[in-house]
Image (cartoon, rainbow, N blue to C red; front, side, top):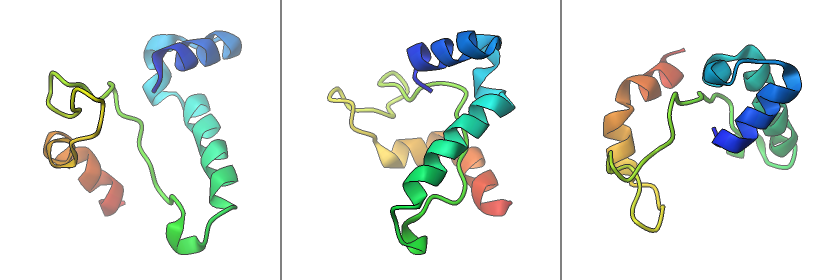
Length: 89
């Protein structure tokens, strides 16, 4: 989650910002945005499941390049358990 946006959302809703990544209200807000975008795409192109990571992807963990491009292989390695949970359920 973007720290500034999630902090503003939590302040507006009276939520503790430290629980934003696990908040049902935050998840519902993201889901509503995904639902709006999904309406514009064919079923095979739609997002069906997602998870909110507990932290941002970082260059220090070699998940991002210096130009902030995602290093997919490293993200897959670092978040393998989380990715498996998405596909398992």
